[in-house]
Amino acid sequence: MPNTILVGAQWGDEGKGKIIDFLTDEAQIVVRSQGGNNAGHTIVIGGDKYVLHLIPSGILRKSKICVIGNGVVLDPVSLVGEIEGLRKRGVKVEKNLLISDAAHLVMPYHCALDGQRESLKGSKKIGTTKRGIGPAYADKASRVGLRTGDLLRPDLFKKKLSRRIKENNVILKSLGAKPLNAKKVLEEQLVAAAVLRPFIANTAVFLHRALASKKSMLFEGAQGTFLDIDHGTYPFVTSSNTTAGGACTGSGVPPHRIDSVLGVMKAYTTRVGEGPFVTEEDSLGDMLHGMGREFGATTGRARRCGWFDAVSTRYAALLNGIDEIAITNLDGLDNLEVIQVCVAYKLDGKTIEFPPTDSDDLARCKPVYLEMPGWMKSTEKARKFTDLPPNARAYVKKIAELTETKLTIVSIGPARAQTIRL
Image (tube, rainbow, N blue to C red):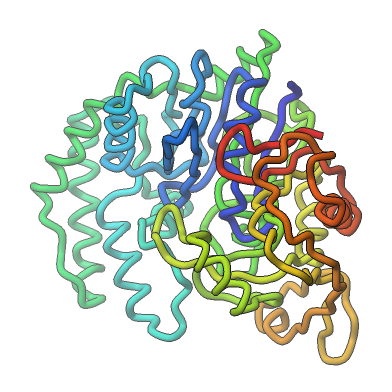
């Protein structure tokens, strides 16, 4: 397959993990290039459910190499837990996993700061997962962060970490939080470091050598376009570039070596946490939650739900350079007689075709809907595009038309087999 970047075209939770797992059969290397363990990619194989947070989804395929790139912020203890959990389930995690020596570390003080600052915001909270992601990226930008390469030198790592704990305990106290037990933190991190050392390497060099050998790569995006620190619904965003450009800066692979960008989007819209959501519809959310759907893989929080928003996804296609799209969760709409699709926004009486940059302006936008007939029939057993009901086919074709992209994949359930390739 061509070297492909896979991105979420909404607010995350689009089903990227399943699509990555499906496509990994055709790729040789899977690269994670941004975010941290605030991401949750769910894959169902033969009735077994796997939720991955840091390790690329390709780990579940034999003979695939998984790379955690330099753009990722990595919690060592969490990653060790993920590795051990996979091994207990019979998944090989050995030489098939590489970790960049330039990836920054998420430390316990980052998590403590994240949680305390969110609590102090009260009604103005952002809705962070409190996994320390923002503070870790802030340390990276401030040039005081610890990196995975530091784990290769235990004595130096211990000195650096001790100094950072001391500095951050002062900040935690000033915010009214309990300071960390330095001895306990050091012990936990050194144990995790010993486990992770064999995986750490200069992954940029590895990826360039793989490119020279004509190996195909799949870049696994985390979160979604509108959580991007630059292009998302700021300040209700994550702390990394979740758009396609982040795959290059977060891996060391140059843009001209990328062949294709695949955008993943649900057949409706969801988001977790705070922030404006133009097409939010409580009745749709109640239906989906009642079906046992739309609960966060990382936090367990019920996701906010709304109708498909072609205004935002068209903008996502523009920002990412999306060539093809995969539409997931089509089966979630199987029981609806009528389906709404947002084709434009009304802002202060004017019709607009792209979302405004300012979140306050976005919060004032009203959706302009196109009404489409539902299909009132289960799609879960469809294995070919022609197996889908006519109205379902018309619906996904309309999404591709409105987003000005090419439809190549439709997902109608969590299992690998429930994936239709056009």
